[in-house]
Image (cartoon, rainbow, N blue to C red):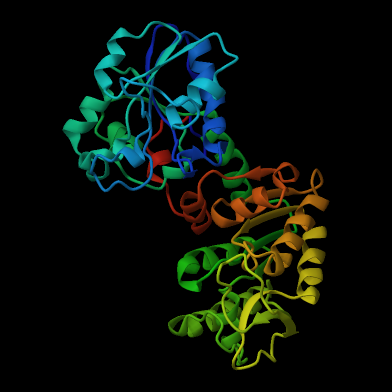
Length: 413
């Protein structure tokens, strides 16, 4: 995708720049538990500030459903105190930019931008407190743009959303110069380029819960990859389509015929579609999710009627790893089992380990969402080529869809 990026812009000194970031970070008990999205935005923010731009940062946080909520505030500063490190805004100020000779002004409203000096930034409060954001309201777009001369989208996690701050602000012609930040540029250069021109053999791995969630992904990837590996809950619908008993495993009854079609499509195209040959089963879903379970491994065509498939077995792990070992490009979206449980995480760990083993010899891409969380949680984050910051956006890219937040950006000449 031949889109302009911030490095294509000339003479940024004094320019007023609106940057759409993705600061929708996970939090627990008021603490940020994963800073990756904040850290991912830093290269673009630092580049603009170092160049002397006057920067306005904006993002959403959670799903407040257009209602103001303290829970979803980006800036929780009040008149009494600021608990550093407990809010997204403070995290950016205290940690992300702590070693930089720049000032990050925290402000809840856009009008504070007028006081910005060169090399300073202001953060607007949660965009989704306003119903106009998701409804693409033109007046809201104009207020958001204010006097901005340049729009930078660096929020890949929302690039599949057609909202005011992600696309409409450019589509309405309110800001003419629209480019991507370094984070989106990396997402496109690694993921999009791999999908369009992969080194071969090209292996795609899909896991997660339901076939219904990835209908178009399966179909599109079968046309691009050499081997499609299926794991996770969605595998049992494929096994059922083969005529196997799947017990009480997760099953999309309405998608059995679709799975048959995909297996027939793979065979006709000379593609390899791999399903689990053995399965780890339990009597019920673990409760709590990380609690002890009584698990046994059975062949995938011999799942007992009263058992539930929870992970891929040892033989399947070896089979999947063998395909990864011979690959030149791999994309992975969705865990192989209930990775949050130590007993049921072995399949996901095996795939992550196989990717780590080919690090540096093969392009390995984690397509966001649960698979990204699994890789990071299991300690393999530094042994893959790229971990996407957008689960939903990655899936739509894998489907071959056009992402509004990228389509609106200026093309390179």
